[in-house]
Image (cartoon, rainbow, N blue to C red; front, top):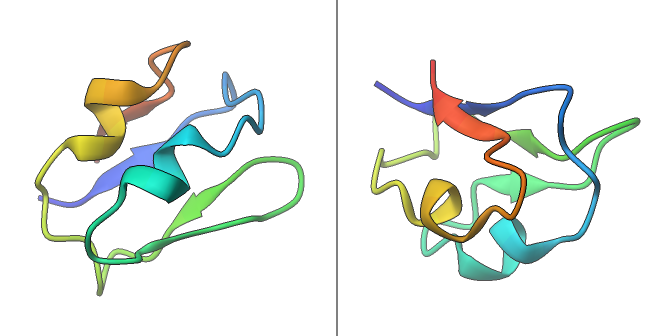
Length: 56
C-alpha cells in the first residue's frame, strides 16, 4: 500500500530527499507522493519531523 502525505506537511523536503523511488514531488500546498512510483518502503515516514507521511 503506497504512502500519502497529510495536510500536516510543513514542506521541509526531508521526505523527498530520502525517497529511493523518487516518488515524492513538491506540490501546493504540500509535497505529494506518486502512488504508482511508491514502493511502500516507509523511508519518508521514518524521517518526517511532523509524521505527515502515512500509509494510504
